[in-house]
Image (cartoon, rainbow, N blue to C red; front, top):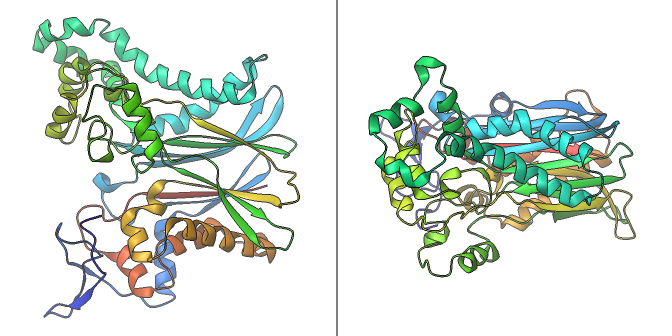
Length: 422
């Protein structure tokens, strides 16, 4: 990325440490504090919100990390781990939801997608299981879109409706805000990666939209560890995703401008983000009138001009099945579910290690702890050492800067990690 530059530390005349955090411009350099051990580890743990839980007997260790302070900087990620009853059997369901443009859609998915999946998988008898999961994601997304279409069924009539009438319908806060809640949910978006383990613990299904990660940790017969990405990345870094969008809209040359859909959004599949799924009139006449609404109206107006033949995003997940019994190549032992903060270009640049090497290292870190039975120690959390490695924890200066930077805005992407042990 053009704004990235080598990491530097300097000392201000008043003695404060300053770092550019490998960012050129954008307000750098910033003050930070160099933390010695054990204070450094304590600060990491304080921000990590580390938690160990059980999903129908499966161990799930998680972290939910965003060191920037203040409500405006609060994490838009959400995580879930719990039971899922499928046709009378207790399965396990674990998910990571990386919200964007606001937390509302990620919050909605965390609270409601597990139950929706449970109902969909329990009620379908004839359909293949993978297809049932695909349809569960699609129907969940349709339930976000449909309330807006029911409020305003005729997109062609929106431009002729009196503005004051539209705004009264949209911003109905005084009467409970039910319309506004439906509209704001549709304006927000989230990735979703979900792992389902059956009651026998012999089968794993992973379904994902967007660019959150699902990485399988498999122990080979010689005791070493293999990392395997389970679902593709649905974003502008995946050329096949961009080409699929171009093929669906061949007469629109700016459709993947700057490797973003309509030049605006990085993900190519997501829940919500309805502005990319319905005619532009809904954005111009409905979404842009919501108060509070979009944070930057000018950027929304720019991509709306390119919205000619929607939909441009889909909620069709990739679905993968894994036999947990293993084979001659090895035995699956755990899966890492992670938001894309773990592979943010900025953080990868500072780590100085390519993405695949990092993923392999994280699997080896978790695997080593499992092999030594350290995971059974009270207070141990398998996601925490992965988080530390993500933020280059072997370098105290780098980790200190990530944790203590003095800035009014976010300097790191939200980062969530869930480790599910089979």
